Length: 221
Image 1 (tube, one colour):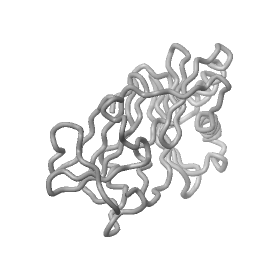
Image 2: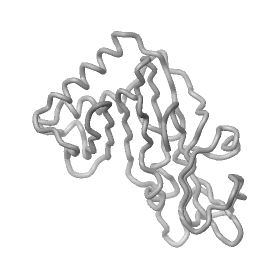
Image 3: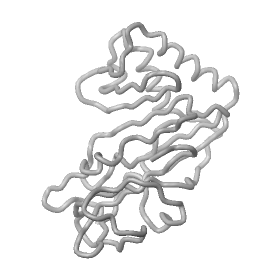
Image 4: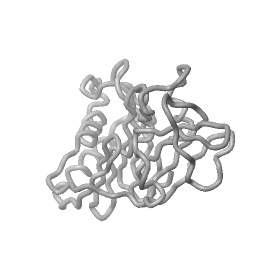
């Protein structure tokens, strides 16, 4: 069911509904967009990183989240790197490190949202502090990290067809002919694949691609 789309329909159809969530209280949040992969929905992966004022950090993979409470030294290390980025002369809302590569969306509290692309390791000198921050957050690891069970998921739906069979729609009113983005509870999502693994759904005479993006506390879909 999740291996490929029929008739060459691309998973990028989900992109219209899967913009990164917003976490108003986050000091910094990062979304990393991997290149499209057949049968996957990278847009539905959780945020790669989010840091809240109480020192709680959330780290996402392709489908799951982990969480930890940082100590002051770890917190200050991240704040120090953010401060270097804020002081970059002429930093705008976008930066290109190299051709190709990943796409990044960095959200700074009381600062700009920065869209960056390419390989941070190849960043020119003027973007090195930004590239180093992205590398730190994208590869963040900590011995205190533990699996986190999200209480809410963003429901992402697009009219399309996956190869194989399909599930029945279980999220209330049928989605209709357009796309849907709203939150659902962990209970409602309990029997569904989550994150970058989508599912095919049948409702009436229509078929949909459905993905459930794990949300960190306070994140708006």
